[in-house]
Image (cartoon, rainbow, N blue to C red; front, side, top):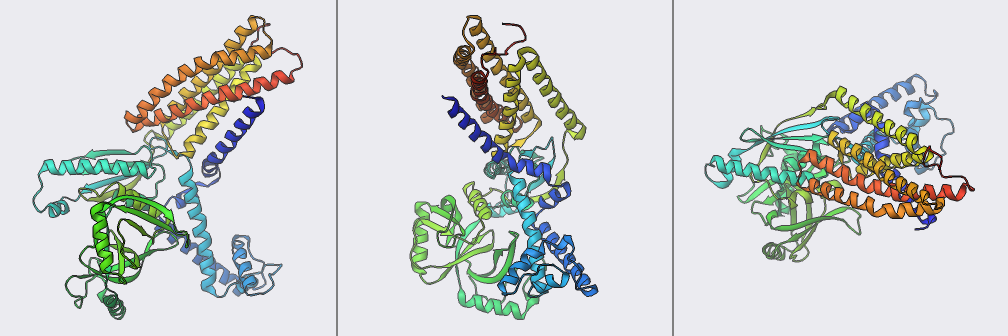
Length: 575
């Protein structure tokens, strides 16, 4: 490959890696710790914080305008100017040049409008940071800590489902299947290297590294994958909403469940229709009367994928039914043309639509945001849990190694890297600096790839990273020694470099191919800790080969072409 082509390849790879690494750098380098804690909290906590901050700002502004309407707008409220400017333009009024407190109030229709704008600012800021944190490289339980969740098997519910008393072996087998399903869900949700183990006879302990979103974790840990289609009784639905509006004390039971009114006939049930708000939290919008009989059960779903509606742009979930489910669904939709069908997930009505014609095997439903649609598809693909699980406890856990151990490990990495850099320069003169640059680029590429695939960095992963850096230097050593051999044969620098890289190629490839095979086997068969080591090792091998054969080669070719007859410095000894 020509020098220009190699340069283009290297620049493209560096730019891509920089793009993938940006979230990690931004999250760990520029986001304050207190802001991280807010952004990694639950959506309910973000909602409460945003509304609290908006209320505080509105009260402060009201006090300022009461004291001195012409006072200059304090900088902490300058974020509201953008919202006010848009309102000024919408009202076709000139935008003020000097922003006073009075001018700011004049840019909103009322206090509620100002409150909504302030809440939107805080909500958007924190949700954007939450998304940034999800894209950043996550640290494992041993380095940073994470979330510990203890799940307890609901044996009573399981026995009700099978209609008899379950034996201890049946319960053990059901819990074992639960663990397998949870492992599949966690893998597909992108949570890397969790710890999942049986605790006692009927409990499952799960430890998830990093700052996991509690709502999302609960959605796939406790999610039953319960999705059913039911027919809506529109006449009784109107009566139900009117009844609840007139009798607010009759809406809920003492336990908080939706109360079933006496006027509903047998075979009809009341349910809530939920819509996700701006925070992604389900909010009860209205009430619906459904047929108690299930029109179609989710067990007939063969596959579930997410897509985007071409007209509305909203996310949708596409389901493929098995042959029996297709026949059931076609019969159901054909006999209820013109009626309304509800999509009920874990007891909540999530979407409703009018049936226009019979539908057989391909079903498309909306009413979900993109993340919820993807999560629902995963839960359905991984099947329902044989025995339902109840969250017994959920808490944050600290780094298992402790801050001192983590700090000592990081110092060891820095010292080791520095010693390798010094040794390469001491032995190979200026050419050693080329190897050192390739070494640093190799580290940059590895961390970028780990960040791009959202891997979790544990101490075993760090061990794989350090081992790979040593192997990357070894690759350069092989190439350098080949170049020195060619120079001893009397070849010119350019010819020695070309021959050295060509002859070292298969030696380098043979050594690295065997290592990457071992890494791939470990990643498939090893435990979670071993997988972290194997994944890092595999990524590092590919990266080290690239930096040695592309980056080092490019630098050598460029320096030889520009040296004007000077000797290649590949050793401190005179050649």
